[in-house]
Amino acid sequence: MTKITFIDLKNNATSIDVENGGTVRRAAVSHGIKGIVAECGGNAICATCHVYVDEPWISKTGAVGDDENALLDMTAAVRRPNSRLCCQIRITSALDGMTLHLPDNQV
Image: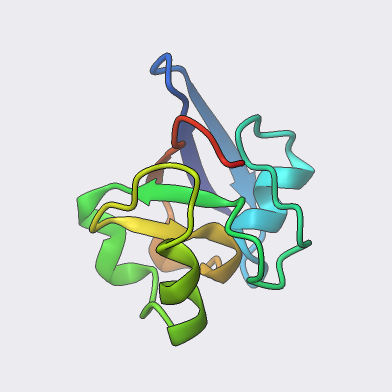
């Protein structure tokens, strides 16, 4: 199991334990994380699963692909250097303890 923590705008933390192999988006939705809309079901076409990855974890989330990069330019919240679409982050044991911050809005 891998533990991932989501921090909302009020600085409330919600930690979830998830199986490796899936995506962070799927884990967030299945655990009812408010702030992850995920309208497209994880197909990288809507940018409503935008998160900010804490600095120590950025290099462990994998490279940003061309499609994700284009979508990050269209997010409802401000794109930052640590912005990612969580549908594109595969859960591995290397992410155990990762912290993600939720943006102020997704749509």
